[in-house]
Every structure is written in C-alpha cells, then in structure tokens.
Image 1 (spheres, helix red, strand yellow):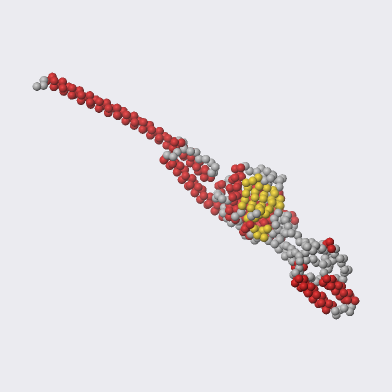
Image 2 (image 1 turned 60 degrees about the horizontal axis):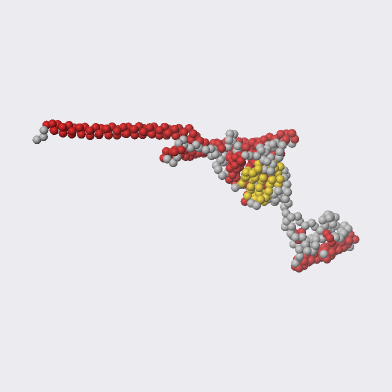
Length: 478
C-alpha cells in the first residue's frame, strides 16, 4: 500500500513536468511570434520600399519618359530615357511601362497625322482661292502690257507681273506640299524652256547662268513640264538665297545614260552633314510630309520637291558639294519622261540659251563651195550620200539630174579636178539608175529642142537654143 507522501511526491513531480512542458510550449510560441513579427516587419519594409520605388518609377515615367516619347514622334533623333531602376527592365513592371510608352507614341502619331491632314485640307482651299486670284491678276497685267506701248508703263507692268509670278509660285508650292495638283496642264515643251521658265519665276534670276549641252529638240512629255519647272525653280531659289548676291548660280543641262540631268551649283556656305541628310530625306519623298516638320515659318521648297519626285517619278540629289564650295543639286529626268520636238517646226523660246551641240554630222560641202549659185548657175552637181535631212543622191530626186532655167551668161570656168570628191568617196551607181538618168536627160533635151524650134529663126532664140544644146550635151557627157 502506497503511502501518502509518496503520492504527494508523485503528483508534484507530474505537475512539475507538466509545468515544464507548458512553459517550453509557451516559450516556443513566444519565439515563433517574435519571428513572425520580424518577418511581418521585414515584409512591410519591403512593401514600403517597393511602393516608393513604383511611385518614383511612375513619377519618372510621367515627368521624363512620356514627354520624351511624345517628342520622339516628331523628332526621331531624340532619345527616350530608360527606367529609373534598371532592375525593372524585363520584369512585368518594366514591360508594362514600355507598353504604355508605345501606346502613347502610336496615339500621338495618329492624332498628329489627323490634325496635320485637317490643316493641309484648309490650306489647300485657301491656296486654291489665292491662285485663282493671282491668275486673274496675271491676265489683267498682260492685257495692259498688250494695250499700252509707253516704255515706262511697260517696265512698271513687267515688274508687277514678275512680283505676281513670285507670289503665284509660293502659293503653288504651298498647294503642292498640301497634296494639291500642280495647277497647270502644258503641252510638250523643250526641256531648256522648262528650265528657263522656272528661272523666270525668281527674284535675282539675272544671277543664274544656264549652259545648255542637250541635243537640239530634247523635250519633256506634257505631264512632266510643270513639275520640272517647279523643281528647278525651288532648287534655284535655295541656291540664290544661300549664296552671296555677287556670285552666280551655274546650271548645266547634260545627257546621261538614263535620260537628262539638270545640275545646279552655287557658291554659298553649304550644309552640315545633318542638314544635308535631312534635305535628302525631304527631296526623296519617301516619308510622309507634315506641315509641323517644316519649321516655323514652314520652309516648303524641299517638301514640294519631295512630293513631285514621288508623284512624277523624278529624282533629286542634294547630298554633294559644288565645286565652288556650296551645294550641288541634281535633277534627273529619266528617258520615259523625255520626248523630242523638231526645232525647225517648234523652236525653243528666243530667250532660251542655245545648245552647244549640233543636231548631227554636217553634210559634205558641194563641189562649188567656193562660188555662189548665182555666179555658177549650171555647175555640175555631184552625188552625195543621204544627209541628215533624208536628201538622197541628186538633191533628193531619185538620182535624176535636174534641168534649170538657163540664163544668157558666160560659160562658167571649168571646175578644178581637186575640188571634186575622190571617186572612192562617191557612191557607186547601178547600171539601171545610170540608164534611167540618161534616158530622162535625153527625153528632156528632145522636148526642149522641139519647143525651141519655132523660135529658132531669130538670132537671140538661135543663140539660146545653141547654148541650151551645148549644156545639155555636156550634161549627157558628164
């Protein structure tokens, strides 16, 4: 039988063990709570840091990156700043922010194009009215020039007409930049006339020196005449504006393998590399042209050239320097835009510079080159090859000798043998041709004799008949 003290001792031991176990559990729980509080504190600190970083990134996006991205739409050379925290690149947050910028740029570009299109439409309507008024004024001035002969009044009217022409050119360029048609339909014209027509639209046109090295009759098809004149006028205007007033602007017209080139050289200051690249982009016409890209006030000359080069398949290059230290601009007109006019039927304008080229090889000189037709009326005519005008042997009459009205003059001196072309240079005649020529000559001689027979009883008629007979027989012998 267990004694009471033993039971008490056992109970105390069990209670002690229970108390120790409970205390250990409470201690572990307290430690766990401490760790949890530390983790919660760390997470809260991390969350606060992330929130601050995100806030700073959004503020950086709004303050720096969004304006730069919007400006980049109009100025592609500008750089957009990167994220404030480089560690966000490639993360979901970084990708989301980049998508925001891309969407912003797309919307800005769309709205910019829409606003610019509306502005161009409004300007097209305005320039159309201005052009119509200037054309009416031009017609009125020309009627006055035709009506009055006073020199002073004519000079004043000419100056007014030239000023009106310059205003008309500016309105036309503005309309072309805004997508309007060139405004004039012309017939085929000599290319040199289109160049001088563009020159005449400018102030200071006297400084332009045109050197025409084209083949006579080189012309433009009808739909290319006015575009070429506008482009030449704008290239010359740039050259005149950016060169000293005491220097010349040299224009050369040359044939090239694929057509014709109009080269404009000035002695101005030239352009920097960036300016030259921008000018080349504008005249190439590859990118859309917006009014907001042209400055304030807008400079529309190169933009108009770009519109026309793309629309009419022309080529303009301004990427090189001129030999005089300025800028060289080259307009290339391909062969499919070229035509030909007969200079005899439709000569160039009297004010156009004459070409330095001849229309073809010169025809061989006649054997009587040292005399005149009046001095030697019946000189022998040597047969020559077909010349550039299509005249064949015997002066274009199938090789047959031609009878001329005889005059009672002394017989001409014999043509020296040295003046005649060598036998090797004369084309050989077939026997049939020689027989036909001799038969025709004999028939003509017989007819002339029969007509002259009734009047042979008079001395004058007999002398004329003898002279005619002598010449005919001599011609048959030749």
